[in-house]
Length: 399
Image (cartoon, one colour):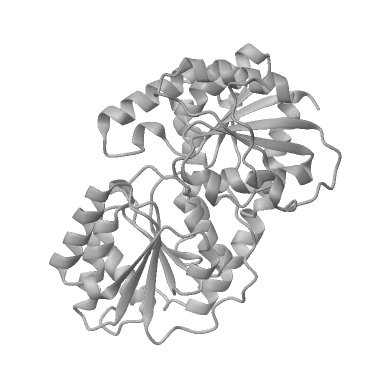
């Protein structure tokens, strides 16, 4: 191995294999990831490492911004190489990555972000192996920072031209890439998936309600809309509380959001957990999962995890969310940015006598819980995600 590449984390050899190989190894695939966070896209990467071996593919990770991912992942038996980039345009990292691909005999490079795509593309070209790019969300609508969106979208379009195949996590993301100029036959839809959570559906409505919002809290997630809706609902006399699960993107944004909660008078009704890794344990503590995103979603893992746990979801009708949630069957969909619609959805699900919808049947909370869990099992399992991706690998490698 090249002296430029950091050796795999020692943790990769200290834990027993999470999932034993059940089929012969077809090929080794190197997943190039950022690594500064451990949120939705990183959960996908981790789960693929756990489940692809059963499909015949051995996985390794190359981390170009190693921070939270190396210590938070569950796939501890998967080799992880730290190759930190000195800047967004550190082309030398691509050359180091190419040496790693050759030395460790990886047959395919799989990149997951515009940054990792840049160096992954260089490595794939130098090493003479195919490149796959996983599109987790629309880069041009990823944040409220217009310049960053422009740069990421430009970098993505330019670098993805080298990719043999693009993998989109939702039909809306697939269409986004086609609209960006990529041939339809080059862009494959592989829906995200999460593991089964071995719990029964909710049997009855709770006496008091706890909303849960799990996210890397940043402006596009719409937490401000939820705080205003929470204040509105509580003003009617309903005892609704919020469990906010996850870290903030920046300390400044955290201060801004908590100041708004104080201004709205809901601080005492909110528990901020900070970063957590045990999502099933958090889901057991909430009655409804809320995702009030304004834009920029692919197929959110937090929605799929809630469904797996039988937790009904209230979410914005953005990007890939309606692909998972069927309105009034598995959850409720509202327009992004609408405080009034979100408040009404919370009140209706909680069964408030102050809200009437004569044209609608009352919501069956236990039925909605069972529907969500069944839909996850049928459409969005982690095994299905890995199996669908393995088929893409087979096609690209001619296996």
